[in-house]
Image (cartoon, rainbow, N blue to C red; front, side, top):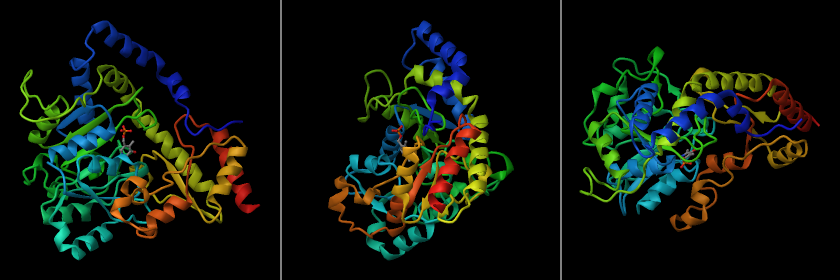
Length: 406
Ligand SMILES: *Cc1c(COP(=O)(O)O)cnc(C)c1O
């Protein structure tokens, strides 16, 4: 039995009629850029996430780029983020001429460590005045520890941009009607926007994307909600920021051929919006199935030599975009063992961002961010998706167990 890492063809079998109808409707409409289908998708996303404004853009990468542009990040500015993420998180910073400043992760959660962030602000009084944004990443579908970071950011008047590319639907505990989420400088003018507090979902939890001044999502095909091509989303509670994102995605124009500033073509295709709107109906069901599979792995992979992923806020608040274990010493050998038995795995991420050749000039030696480097050398992502069958999951467990005990 082959166990693919992800099977989008299997997913299509569960959604094909709705998707085909949505695509054909757009084709027939003749409206391929913008239009009511895009607008209704944006409203559906704003409701799902619990924010006032959602703006479709061309990719998660462009969502990050535009969000930083809204905050006027430019040459010489600093943006603090994690070294353990997909490249785009730091790439967007560098593309604006700004400098990514890395703060190491919490070894348990793979997410940026708020205590280390506070340390950096303590230790770097000069450089901290040049910080234009803090960009936590909610890695693998689990929210970073936002409360202490939002407080720190607010105390320095620095906006927070959530990289929620992997975390659509994830939640963070706390909040409620008088949640502290407004504290991060909820608007781009540095004020707080009360309208955002308490809209994060049931049980007083806050949804990924509702906590920062702006937040970025990706609909890359392998994400939990995936387009059939590239697509992304920026969300914000600040009407002024929303207006600016809309402008920047359309060459900085506010009316036809009038350009107060330079933007780009960062628009979301109407076809992708239609496909995503159809798939959004399934998303919560898919998340439930991912959680079931995570619980099953948690139960059956509790074996010597495996460190299980830590659901810091509980499994129900995690969306398990990835299920990432850590293996002492023999990670690569385990991966080969599984591959030889037609079980696909992935390594997220083999090279932390501070060790990328393009950031060589930042001069971070090996060992600069030990928790990220340790994660890079020991983490292994196992297949997890709604269509993964119990028999396939048992194969993964059996062979992992056999290798580690053998
Ligand atoms: C996928 C991803 C992005 C980029 O999204 P694209 O749509 O692929 O451009 C950014 N950050 C993280 C953490 C991601 O996982």
